[in-house]
Length: 310
Image 1: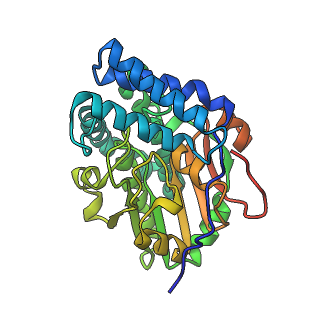
Image 2: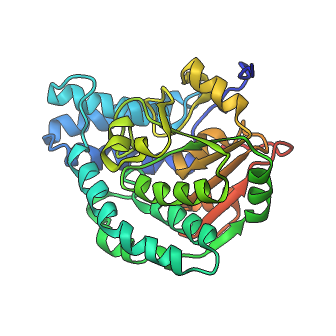
């Protein structure tokens, strides 16, 4: 049996580049939840206090975003499992399902279906209300342009070679809606690697518009592959705060495909070369970290020999 590395811990502190985004997220999430100005100010103070604490305490952006979500839930007087973004998550899933047939046609017509499916899965990562304000996201426009977004970091041959030798792939999902495009890509993986066991991991609890097991069921992902909760209540995967079952699966997987910026931020400092990050770069800081242009796509193998500071 594989054993998770108990020493794996996230890096301390929040990068100064992220401060304004965290505060803006607290503000936009509060307004989306229809809090009044007094309530909104209290929620923003929660974010600001977390950022100040992160100067001396090993906190991540994801920890503060969770505190913001919990503060909003408390202000609304709802239970801890309340999903602030339930409505837009449902809309994202429905809209993505509406486009799935057309995108499947693009995949089938491609000279390299696996690569086209990979591109669509990566481009679908734009459906992210943590990195982009819900009010500014034109979902229909973004979905129409999925096939036109280029990769500027593309470790595809290494990824393919890793899959050729793999028995198990752990697929770390990210957002609602996006998981429909993950589903298209997973179907291709199953066709090309019929002996490969694929397990999809999702968030344990609603946070922003990240996908949970309920979302996987809504789009039929659970009928395609084994799905499980990672135990994460954050918009990312903080390994030390996931379930033992997930940690063992992560440690044993031959290949890990990590979707999205939240997983990228939380896993990059501790990931080994089994891990491949698939995402759309949405901010200047992540662009500098991955050394690619903002708004482009990345398929990047983790580099165990390179120390990364977030």
